[in-house]
Length: 280
Image 1 (tube, rainbow, N blue to C red):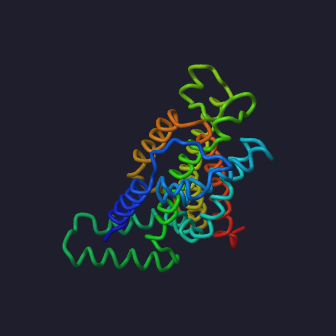
Image 2 (image 1 turned 45 degrees about the vertical axis):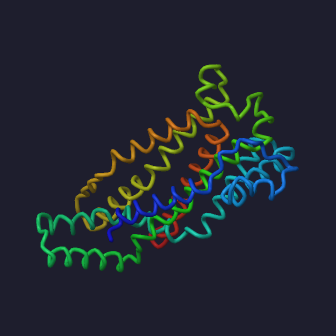
Image 3 (image 1 turned 90 degrees about the vertical axis):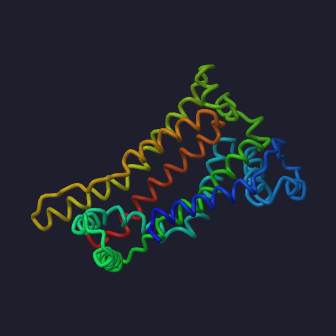
């Protein structure tokens, strides 16, 4: 089973998991709401949405709605990182291996017989083993984060404090689309920053891989040939889709995604520094 096929299967599984467990309830979750009350909305609402909503509700009176969402975002990423650190490292290394992987694929281009395909697979596995990379481990992070994103969406939608609290005079329960129409610039700025940070977070691994590739080429006095990226259009489409969807979701979720992107940027830089510390 190839990586793309496995990615599709896990994505469908994640969507099925979320859809079968998600609640369509719009009833607000307050500090007085009990766990048993939310259980009626489904296990997903009880296990993920309820604790996230209560964390936002509990933190807001102490630090304000902006920092409440920020702190919950950091907690989510901390938990995710405990389970996905190795997969994040693998994902970043996979970016750097693209030139060598494409050389192997070019070597066997047009040769579809079983013997050639097996040799190509063997050479690719040897390359993964050389750099200690598990190609399938690179998709674990996305698989885990998807339910949390949906959980955070429901938490923001149902949190009493998101519905009632304001940040700089603006309600973060307002959607960016409404903010543009009503010229609520605080929400507009949060949305624009979210799109910009997401773009950087998506592109940064590619920029780092190119930088490292140029370093390696210079070290061996060779000219650097950037690897072809057949998924570039998909990457841009993903960014457009995120920007479009977030227009109709509460600005609080744009704030969550903005901070998530900033965390991912820092995480990418730290992982790169750690994996290349011997070159520093």
